[in-house]
Length: 106
Image 1 (cartoon, rainbow, N blue to C red):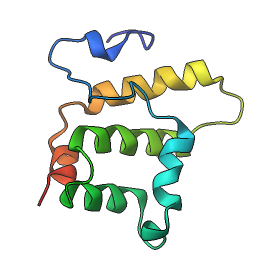
Image 2: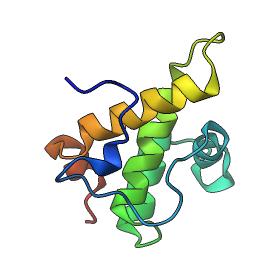
Image 3: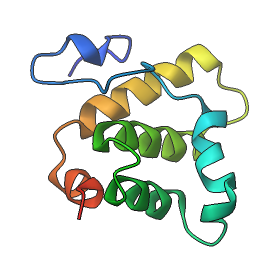
Image 4: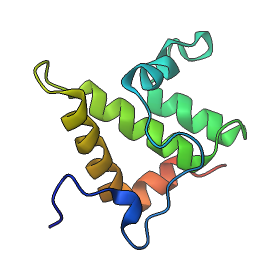
């Protein structure tokens, strides 16, 4: 098992999405706060954005992971440590077929 401090973008076979290398918890929460997604989960909103061609599936996966990880964050954990947790979760889910199916354009 790799140490959590490793950068998952350097692991063979893992491709990061274009754009920002990490999604802040505030940006992930913004998905749920938009008027068009008031009655759907962040995951449903991201899947709808991918299906509509408004969002790249890889970016949607990053945002979904960021939102899920942010929802689990304990109050006393430093941003640096939590960023490492987010990177590790992203690396673990990089080739997950269920996540890929969830975010595949219709």
